[in-house]
Image (tube, one colour):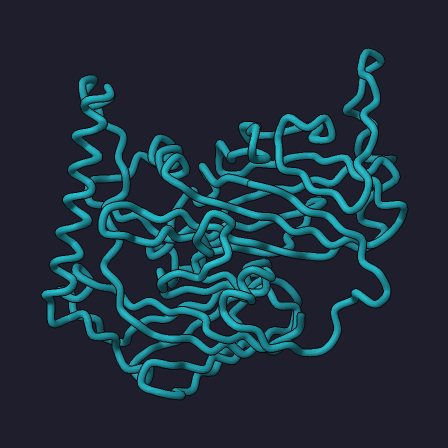
Length: 361
């Protein structure tokens, strides 16, 4: 029985399916049939309002396999929505977010989102994920269900990644194209870091810019590998960045909720970030660790099993990481120092940036 059998009533007018290639970029489009725990947008598809959010799209595939691209985005409104739901404790930092993208009820890809810390403001972050659906996965009713949910965190990364990660995440657009015979992915490919993130093969905090195409500075010590090959090689550049700023907390006093109070809070947060930068630049603990002192771990995000990972030092600030897995699906890779001084953790943190990816496209 088709998925949409239970959705319609005799009073509903049938909505025609959108032809391929299709791009959904507004929650007000008639082909966006349903939004669950997601606020519809006008210039975007929607914003997740809980620990998960889903949209149901109507598209005509004519029995063909399709490729789906999803653009995720976090901004200041994302952090405010997260603060209302998570009620962070005083002193809790703004941490990277790990979210999973599902389609037709199955995990497809994961994305790591982390805003870039500027001197005066936080820079928005985009992440792209891309996956293929077989011809039989979209039924005759043409309903495609896209979900954004919290990623399952391993124990060794639970305190370094944000809880309620999906809350407030924007789904800017969903692109769907048919896969032709000559368009099938085959063979290994080598891509630069920004191109690999734009293609959805790897996620290292997100891309920056109005359209999310620039890599920007390194923002976290984690990356997510979505490339489909069983063995993927990543070249990472290791550096140090300022410690994440304190997470936005919703004020309890009424006067702080007004416009003048919000201006005061914003000025206070800008001063905090500026002080953090000054302390980072003046501290002797900002030198990044040598790659030989790093511990590399990897876990499969679908079944939670540890993945085999090996690392070799290429230069003083470059690390070659090889990830091996037995089942397809996204893999979380994390770097950590063997012995990190407490003073260093308060001032700076180790971060990595993907400069090259080699694997199955």
